[in-house]
Length: 344
Image (cartoon, rainbow, N blue to C red; front, side):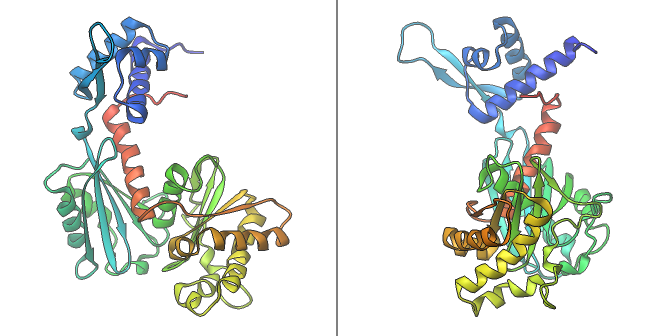
């Protein structure tokens, strides 16, 4: 078994401190010592090292209510890096730009029309407002090849062409990553929404499009070709599931019948994966809320012996965009911090 070298130990300690500052900061040196269990000299050294590298800075003082010198508060230099999350739909593109701490600093939207590379790049540049970007994550409908990172079903997005991701990266001067939009929505549910605290769940995306995201062991599972979760193609008595629960079909249904149809699709996921949790997302999941979720759960209880909870999405706003920003931040922080993520 190898022991950690001094440089590796410093990298682990630095990353631990940076993660704590992201989660709980700003913090004082004594607070960092208490949270990390590191010695006073070690914390002093890492504070000096991270300050010199421009990753943290003094943001204020703590202890004004007591006697003696005040302790300095240290926080992350949020402007050290910026990321963009992109929700690319068939009819519109939405962009949010955030700093390294995850605070939104810009946003823009446009209808999809004309040449797609220039359109997406233009919306991202508008939202960035002159800020250099370290990472851009795009969510789009369709299968994304895990090997190439390219959209397989290009007909899902008007104007899509091979090499578009590479062209965007060159124009924006940033790394660009493409991901299926429902997978990104699942990241948002896992981190900030209805699936918090659940490592296994399936997100059913219902509304303008139909799909599912599979999360097992806290990770999105894409499948060998990127096709995991394409539940819309499921044959339901000669009718594809996507046609049974589309936004148009739902307009002519009462909630009870809609719940029956959703439960049939959810049952397929439960039978194969036994995730323990189904999250209803998309337009129909948001609109139906807890009442629809409870009706779907009731039908599932009658259909399957596997206990399965059903919850409505709790992600506010655009879940795809939120998941894209979170994913971009993960990559950017790893790049900027350049350390070893400690096991905690």
